[in-house]
Length: 170
Image 1 (cartoon, rainbow, N blue to C red):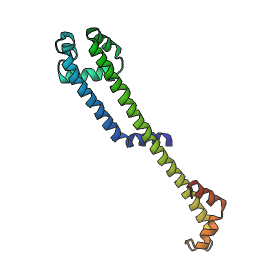
Image 2: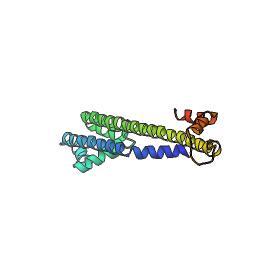
Image 3: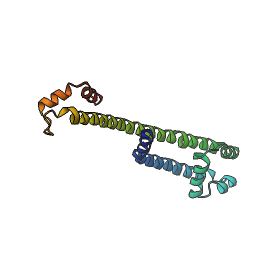
């Protein structure tokens, strides 16, 4: 199943980019956690329920914003403080849409690159197989297990060999 291998190899190639994309997402979450802690001070409900400490704030942002079903969280924050509601919306847009779409683009590009490499490898293997069969069956005219220049030129005149070489771009 070459398509599955292309996807798996693409994911392996993209691991480094995925790692740095996740680091970027965590940095965005960290910066917004600090901001939420500062803006929620003085509001007992928000401060104690969602943003009491750095860890709680980061966990809240990841679980409530990056993961699905943000509407209940957003409505609750917006009911308490419109500026914080706008900040939640901005975080959702930056965290979920921008960074995740960047991650998707990286994965697609990696899969495309691996797919191109795999396709070239399949073409090269096909041409190699065809040429070796021709050399074994028809190429070595004198039977010395060596390919002379005359035998090589003769081999290149065969349509099967020309087709195999053309598939490689030769």
